[in-house]
Image (tube, rainbow, N blue to C red; front, side, top):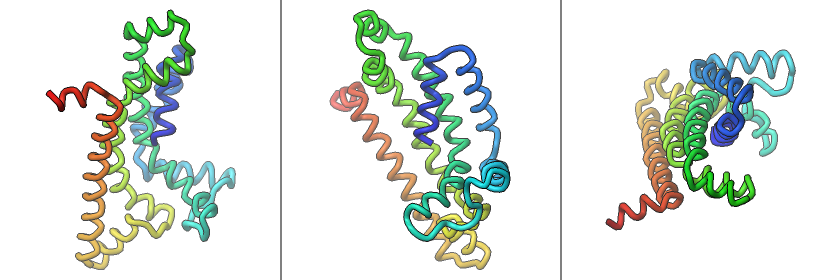
Length: 205
């Protein structure tokens, strides 16, 4: 989610014209597609037709497990990546129009350095907020992805507990998801305070 959303959002913000249009159309479609529909479409194209990825199972050893989980991970991250890409595009484009960025460009600073230190860092606040909201939603979406790809994951465990009326398992999985949500949001707040000195200044005041 973070890699795809940040890269596509940065490209759309920096390169106007057809790259921006293509990414806007792609993210509009990505936001509208549920993860189970994305799982079916990607399985048909990448697994059945092109035979690039396996459809069932989670692999046996580390690299084989990563290979098996690539398609489920992409299916799970499509909606969140599209949302992050749109927020990144808007936030980065606003930062590019600020005077300090224009001054850095006029002084001849390297474009990569200007983008990394003056644009992307200042634009990361809204992007991290999206990450903090979408990761818990993706955890809840593992129920569908685990069922679609026959994975033995947290979502599969939750579904098994519900079907067998095993309430301790359901409560345990729900507690794990709630704890992960709290930890992720605390982590996002800490990272935001580290990246944006204005937050630390407001806290001292």
